[in-house]
Length: 272
Image 1: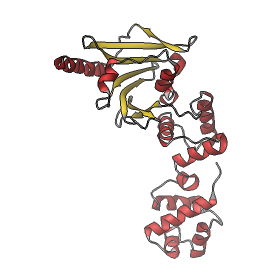
Image 2: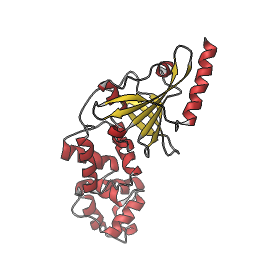
Image 3: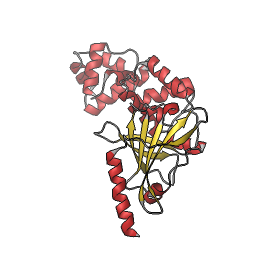
């Protein structure tokens, strides 16, 4: 990965000035480097040696990799721009970073990252489309629970669903979010997953969850409108028709999601 010496120079200068050190004082901390050496670093004439980079990074509360190449966000943004001529929204960028972290992929391993980005390019995920789609954000402190909000929807960018992601079985469980603006509507109206726009809305970000669309299943936790009773539907992707078909509900439903739906059915019945 190429080092931008001018960017590194600017970062070193920021670290020094933020700490309130003169060049001479800063040099003393970095292995007694002379003022002229610090000046050369900050002008981008040359780079500090590895042992000195480690000390500068420590003072700046950062890493050597970030000092040399930028933050993970900057690295990905630059790779997408320079190699794929693409810009993506910040929420999607964060989702990519979360996925890479889950897969224990080093964002500073340029070739591995390039192969990953090429893979999602081939899947069509990075094609610029302005229609809304769900982005999934992991709930802190959990292994497989996410909230799902609609990107590219200025009218309702807030979370709409909880999502339990079962990577092992290639299955995503969806429950209307507690504080969703149209929570009752989402319970009563199951998605039409034979419609390509709707399929794209729910699944465009599946690769970042480790879910293979062609083998995927969606379990939707809804409520039957007529009698306010439990209505759990499972949908399985048909690779030949390129749509989801309704199948018999699996036994491995999310017990916590099912319990939440049951509470909501009781509440709605009381409102009748």
